[in-house]
Image (cartoon, rainbow, N blue to C red; front, top):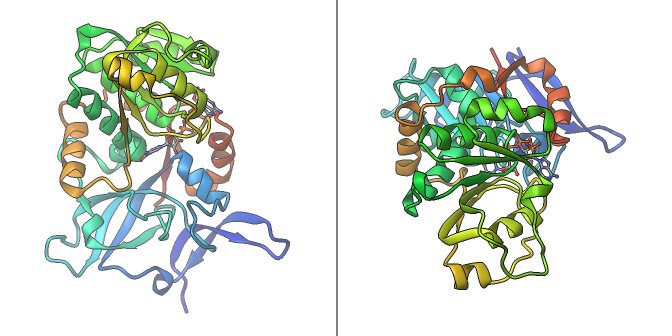
Length: 331
Ligand SMILES: NC(=O)c1ccc[n+]([C@@H]2O[C@H](COP(=O)([O-])OP(=O)(O)OC[C@H]3O[C@@H](n4cnc5c(N)ncnc54)[C@H](OP(=O)(O)O)[C@@H]3O)[C@@H](O)[C@H]2O)c1
């Protein structure tokens, strides 16, 4: 059997260690689905690093191909809504989690997952954004839906140099909000200011006294990619009827809070799921990213790597040391 699909396959070796390697598989080994896509670009998200390490909460079984993002050209379609030759994006759902993902020259997916590439984006720019940009835009949408206004106080973004964080900083700043970027990377201060942050603070400065039910008001809203103690601190420091869009867990999965921010200040906690975002909302978010919310500094946030350099980048993102977005040139 001619094996002709190059991919990054994560498997467990005879010593029980989980390892990722570039290999080739046959098309027939791809999962079931009615659309085949020749993948041009994918990306590296924190969730991909979990899959690459064999985390069972993401990679449901091994061997596994990570990659929650893919952009490419349709080669086979059994659905008349999707045409061979069409440029498309697939992000989220089970891609790169329950199903083999975008770190592969070809993916096979259900047609219901396929988003036509919106006018205004290229396959490359769509994957510089990827799930990170999509999630950042979902967070921004929650902030706007909750009526937060640019002149009503700052918005804090945590994990600001990460993929979601830096793109949230850029979009919010473009919309006129005063953005406070919280980061563990002192050296990234000028870079965050260049993306539009008004102020850069340390991770520690985003924390406050956990013994007190509320802290003095510092922000009207937040995009939180960190979770844990950071999210609890931010909830204590949000203004009346403010909104926190919570999407991440890099700092912990616990939420050690009380009900006081909610019942004394009317703070709204908006949970974000990019993977399960309904298609109508998904299309509308991608249209925003291609149009009104298009990020001007995409080339300033991206590091492009080939598929065979992905292992080192996985270790870096796992350690929290990546700045911006890692674009994976697949083929
Ligand atoms: N809900 C959803 O649908 C959804 C979608 C996408 C991502 N996410 C989640 O959002 C988070 C960010 O994703 P990403 O892809 O943007 O990851 P990323 O690029 O690795 O960014 C995470 C950033 O968080 C900060 N950080 C790392 N470790 C930390 C720690 N122990 N304590 C505090 N801050 C830490 C770092 O930024 P600084 O050095 O600047 O602080 C890091 O760059 C992840 O938890 C991911 O799973 C969720």
